[in-house]
Image 1 (cartoon, rainbow, N blue to C red):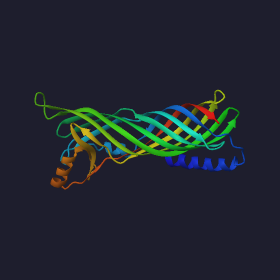
Image 2: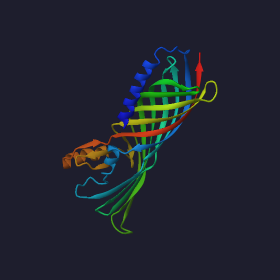
Image 3: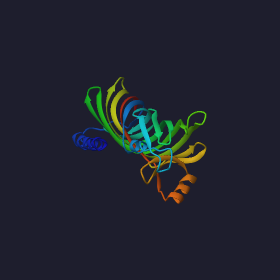
Image 4: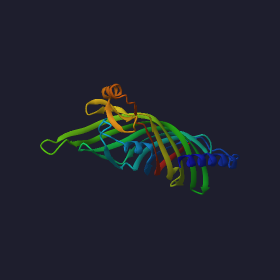
Length: 275
């Protein structure tokens, strides 16, 4: 789906450029605005990997994992862009993207129960190119493409309990604060409506994609990360345990990556300043 909107946007730019190539340019200027959006995240490999979560590295311990939440997103942005001519703009978007709380539960064959709640949010800065076409009187249609950088925080809260019946059962708090950075991409299309002379309201649809190759940080007091084992199981391990497990069990590990996209319906208000 993401490829479709990107290809469609490129076609719109090409056709529109030909159609309006002879129109006169407006004076130069800039636009400044604020945006709020709500969206739906598309589950992918990241979710599939988390469904293979295991709280132990023992290959003899079986587990059953349920994953819920994390589907809806909220987007908060500010943007400014410069008018190149009557139709083209370039600019920057700075914002934050919040996920719905992601819930993970696990029950193991050695009678442990783990419940983790993940709060995931990211900050991004994007360089964007927009093409704008007047539609009818006070209405405009625009499309944009861009890319940039993102930094994501992954905060984990939860517990593990098991090992027998009370008072022999054991209880462990689970606390983590991980961070990762990577690239982000955006394709969007919108309708602008002039409210006043140079004040506009905008409603649009965008596809927001982030790609982060690893997370690391503090988990239960240790420098740790989410790792994927050779058998596909995912767990939180500190660096020392990874080295020990690699030597003692001949297993290989790689850090869990996040590649995730979401469709966002957004609303913006912006002011146009002309020279």
